[in-house]
Length: 176
Image (cartoon, rainbow, N blue to C red; front, side, top):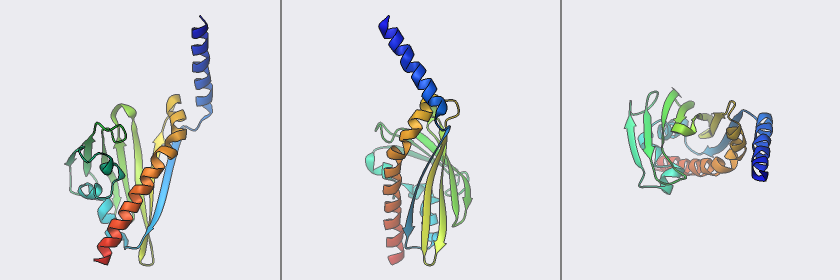
């Protein structure tokens, strides 16, 4: 009986806390790349180049990838399957592509839900400022709201690593 009261208390606490937490999560990282936007955009807008700089590819080079739709831009889609818990399985599709300025992607993680990711590119003299962001909507998913509090600490370092990989790749491309 004590266990049931304890369990009910924990559930009630999760509900109360969850109701007061934000229904959305936003994560954002940025980098300045010494390369023109055209070069940087080419690496982000084409999924066949994604694993050249993706932080998750290094975690599981044995993951399976499938590409569909156009080679790049709106409608380009990538699916992946991995047994590695930090890579998992899912898909992403480019839903908006404005050359050299913006790429928006719909991420689908199956039962774990969907989210939106984007890259904003801004030319700064001969360099490009890249802002990579992730937006998640939790709605009334109270556990999702609680989990959302930890997302920056979980995903932020991956975004930083990916941006650093992208920076090295694009700058090396320009250097010839």
